[in-house]
Amino acid sequence: MLPFVFFFLLFNCYISFSQDMAFITNQESDLLDVIDLKKMKKVDEIKVGKRPAGIIVDQFSKRVFVANPESNNVSIIDIDAKTNTIVKAGNSPISLALDNKTNLLFVSNWYDNKITILDLNSYKIKKILNIGKSPAGIYLDKKINKLFVANRESNNVSVIDTTKLKTIKNIEVEKAPFGVYSEEYLDYVVITNVQSNSISIIDKKTLNVNFHLKVSEWPYSAIHNKRNNQLYVTNQRDDSISVIDMDKKEKVSTISDICEYPEGIDLSYSQNLIVVACWLQDNIILIDLDNLEIKKKITTSGGPRAFGSFVLNGENEH
Image (cartoon, rainbow, N blue to C red):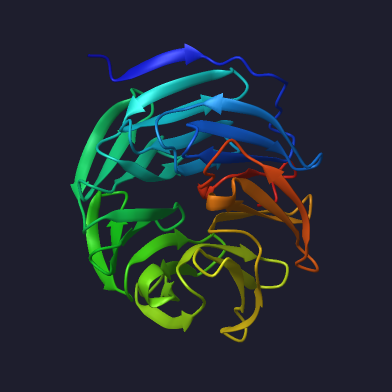
């Protein structure tokens, strides 16, 4: 059996990677919605695998990677070539991290307690690593060659050396870590702890927890605003976003009643927007980055998750 299936996509409109786009995974419809953030409207939808959740939008290779947990594969969408490559990726892939230097794709496998490493040159599995229980969010820092993995049922974060492809440390955090977020310019990693209603901040150099901070009920994803050094954390069961001042290391405000079950969150600096996927409301919310007020709601194909980095910034600022 071939390791992948290859087919062409027919787009309804021309999509350029110079534009500001959000790519939204929809678990109920098995579709990837394409949102033009400048026009603030949905412009296309792309068929992917079953129950898509995790996503990475890669500016440099002009590809979108989607994890499909119930079809046990990853969709690799090349926007310029208008193609979709389906690659087997272990049991229940949920989150993704891409290493452009080695052309390796790291995939967390929820039910298998493993990390699958795909060689994107051959579309074959390079290695499978055993990990903690129920690995969810992952983040790769290519500057320090480390992959951070949130193990929800182990209450810890595994750190993998991506040059040796082995685990070098397990870091205890709080209860049910799920989301993992950072940027290469940050010296810390943010972990969202679903069942303790908190985030943990891990120092990238020491690989120790700097501090824990209470947010609201069931935190899911986080994003950093480098203009004011604030973190924004979505809280599923509170229908809110916690605003955290990282200079003060404290929660300074809450954006309440934004939508039902806010999950994935990302930024568009060029359009001055926070973009939030609202799972149970079947839409995304566009929030003004300056005043933190809702500008628009856009209907999606059904069950938007957008777990990962899903906004393409035309100015390449993010």
